[in-house]
Image 1 (cartoon, protein in one colour):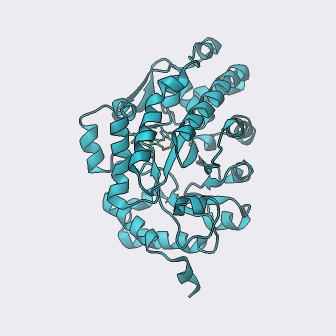
Image 2 (tube, rainbow, N blue to C red):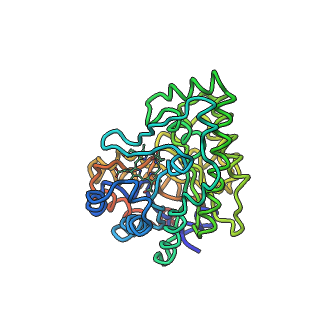
Image 3 (tube, rainbow, N blue to C red):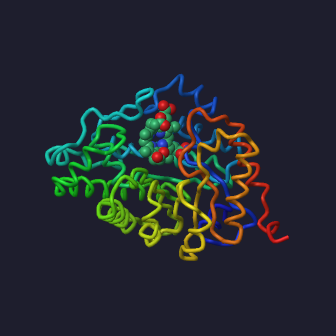
Length: 345
Ligand code: CP3
């Protein structure tokens, strides 16, 4: 058993495990060196490259968990959306899903085969990682649908909201395709040997409560119900901007709730069910702060969670590409030298 798994199951640990969302990425010079030679899609579709990039932050910082190097939009791509990652624009889909015909045109048969490169990367990683657990992941149906409908990143999700309000049947059909595709994809990752699963619903916080229930909570529950998880690996759900709705997330059949930086993690720890682990929630922008200010905040989070079994240190969202890796090292070292007993001394 790893520190990460113990914490995910709310077993008492001597210190919290730490990993960071987007821990593999452009802030690392060794990532940029590979990125200069390969397109992003090539990197995620080549198991040897995906393996190497997954391992980079483990080697450099000794994080307590590795996260598979991939993207939440692999499923959209596998369903037939043409996906490209364009410098300074992010993901672009040039054949977005805008009407019922577009949904019906998605290619659901053979999805697993088209995503087989992920299975191979996991196999390769499991042969290489010694003790460090490997986290597999997928985007939750709503956030993935938003990219498929918008055709890329969008500040307000105007088109997807238009679709859900005015043509809920089409939205429902799209979400249905994503529920089965996502469950299938996660089941493949579980079969291939990942030690944990995380679902990302990054844009959930842009919805009002009724839509949040219909398009976020319900589809995530449907995905979770379809998981075949014989080894009972822990499942995390991460959402952003959902402080007011956290109760609905915590009611899901999950082991870990990912907390963004706007929430008071110590307060949630008092209120959440005792068998729910919490993961978070340093503001990623704190990584631009002076080291003493940064470490003060790290200490504050550590202290506020010290008494509660079930805490995984993370950021409240992903690392930005221009962060100095030394700052990440400072945070990792601080968390890994923390001793839970010390707070009682
Ligand atoms: O966390 C990790 O280190 C594992 C790999 C991972 C990536 N993306 C790599 C990536 C994971 C878990 C993701 C999830 C992801 N992808 C999310 C959900 C979490 C979040 O950050 O909100 C979302 C919304 C996406 C979609 C996505 N992929 C966007 C919006 C972008 C462009 C923005 C950006 O940061 O450039 C990507 C590209 C992407 N995914 C990169 C990486 C390392 C950068 C690609 C590059 O090198 O050009």
